[in-house]
Length: 569
Image 1 (cartoon, rainbow, N blue to C red):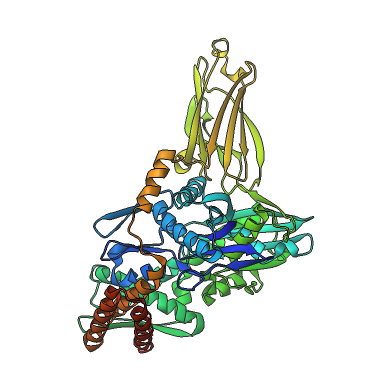
Image 2 (image 1 turned 45 degrees about the vertical axis):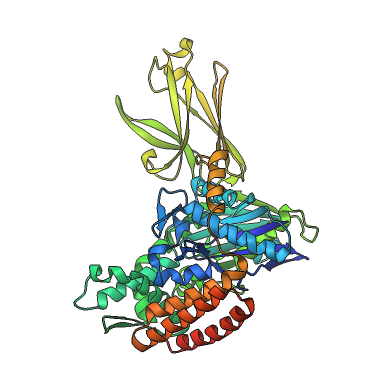
């Protein structure tokens, strides 16, 4: 059994192709969305999902979110005083939780998965995703680009031939643009572009900064301890503006109420700095595909952040048409991942669809450019496979030694779009020895460098010295340094040894975290009421009596709902 996973910045989902259709698998709380949040509670236990999300406001120093943006980076997240994780390890905890949900739903062990990634993830980030899956006990059968998964979910493979679609995927932390074309049963990605640091969180941050600027007699330093509370207010304000013409952000500090009312038009004005960042990758993808906007048959929006009217209005104005939003934007990518999982498993209910992809970034080597006679510029990027080349592909370029009497040539291999290699990502290097018989005639020694790249992210570099028949070869797996078997095992042991609560306690922990969040938001008499309620509930949990706990869950949930109905927003 192969599952499909949408590993998102804000939320993650798991689905399965079963009985001729894609089915979303609920988590232990019965919800389809599992927040991509990890926290450590007072007992040192690791919480994943909704129970962790509830602690973002009440215990921000013990909680991590939006870590997908830091995949393959050196950033570490400290949770409390005793836990420190990389983005890969935090992602592994989310994947492990999704794996457990799938196993509980299916009643069998799950080991294989199709996992979606942003189309504009570089090879380092893709390998980091594979590493996270391996730590969680999953074998990645295919990394699938998120917009491609969305296209499959929309059933584009069932459309008539010669259809062209633009998929815009705006999640919590990333923005992807992919242009696809269907012809003769082949779904071909024509071009991809995007921004790995642009998403719904940036709209939230604009609201936070806008709120701070409106508060007189305060500065940024004053608000530093309250950023988690402000983030919650900004999120609520953003959601409210999805359905209303205006919304209010408010927070009480030392009995002083700070508030800000914002209209949809004011929010649109506030978001103007982001609009050009959306326009650039859209224009780049359409230009690379050598198409015109008017030739598109459909524009599809996916990702939870596309619910914002301000984003939909921008896309409508920019593209001159209303986009398709007939599927739940939160669920579309997971459904596509399940369809791909069914194809990988060769499910008889699915017609065979040939799916081609493209290289999201250019790949090449560093060279030296002769500007004028005896004047050189070193470290100039020379692409061999250019971005948006359909893969698998194999291309060769010819280079020459720079000087007579060189004994060797070092080829440094890079990925990126910058003119200078220092601004791109280094993938590897290969040194070629020049035969003694050719050292005195550099310009007469052609060196053929061939790049071969496949859909699994394998880049094979072959270097051939034409006159001497000498050959060199280098295989780069997803461009990143692979974790050794021992490193993977150590990370898996580290995650396995964490004190994680059983599934049957997940609901209890989530309720407790929800109550603690409300306590952090309230003052005075309401806070006293919540303190007594939390104390009583913890006593019931300590009894370990399932019947009492079930009854208490019902009672406390009703009480918390009443507190939330009385909320400002």
